[in-house]
Length: 468
Image (tube, rainbow, N blue to C red; front, side):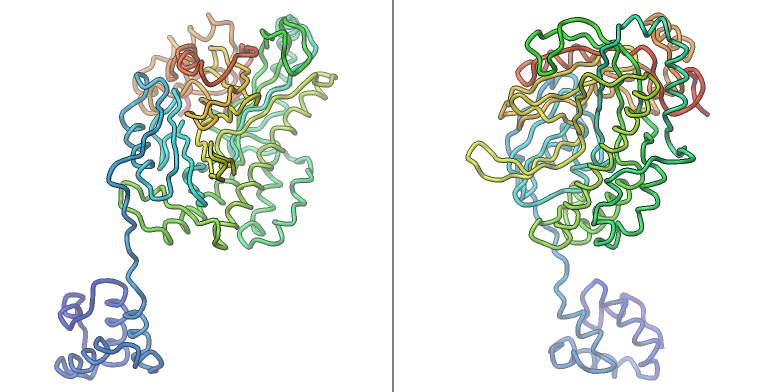
């Protein structure tokens, strides 16, 4: 005999997994029983499931009845207060996402940076402090995504005198998207014992090795440009003036994305939240899964850093010089920090730059707009954070649909910039005005220097054109 789900619930079973267990049991072992007999039998199991836990036939049904139904955690009725920087330039979707995040039971503090826009779970540009909990989507899919700049004691005029050489150097020494080097360089990060200790990571070492030293697609880049040191009292020991510099932007590649996907799924299974907050599911740091993710996240961050360092090492060899200094910061990560009362908090910066007092960072503009080397002021209202860039003014789809390729190409040419690879989705017009963004966060950072892109390498091998 066969029973429908409705018939099974009519017998007295609650909606849930137990319905499927009963359905399978009836079909496989109790098919000869009539409806009345089944009703009598199951009424006894429902009334006292503990008595049937070890029963060879009914044990599975009994155990499902004893297992509590997953409860959906309730959010706070209203979001906690948080600071918004540059609110006039932030879309409503990002505001709504931040307000949802601030209703989480584990939320302790938050802030929204002026480059913010809509994302998954926590908005891009969102900063969220939690208590003993880490949110995989609060970190993001591209764990450890970062900026890295090397400054060379080479005149800025080199960008004009050796332009073709520098272009060839970028093409030879960078790989984007799915492309990899035929002979990847080894790195000590690949010897981390976690590759032998965490089951998920064991299977990712080959992928990590094949992609090391490469960059992702999308908005990731490697570019030569002119750095101008503006602050005489800088931490580099450099005189004010212009220097040749290399700036890269990328993350932890497929290695980090796999980690993010695995632990996000695990968090969503263990932490049931209302639909509007489901991507903010967290892992308690007192649990094995939480500790595993924390270790894996930090390894992915180290791996992302290694990728950048190899890019910069390859360039230094091509330039036949040693960098004067390097500035590096990640902006998709979670840190253990302290609040103003000295209590430990977990600070998620999803597309936000660490800006603790005296901390250096890089905030890029677009491919034609300047970026900035900044020194954090340690502002508590921002949870020691700043923007991670200019932020998108339009989505990739909107940019492709509305921007004119010829007009964009003319704009890039007039700015004195050459782009190798890219499409309309990365056009300068698709981004906010970095100068307005910086104006909105004057309380958060001091500007130490600027960076003006001149030769930009992104995903693709052609001049600026709309990709298929």
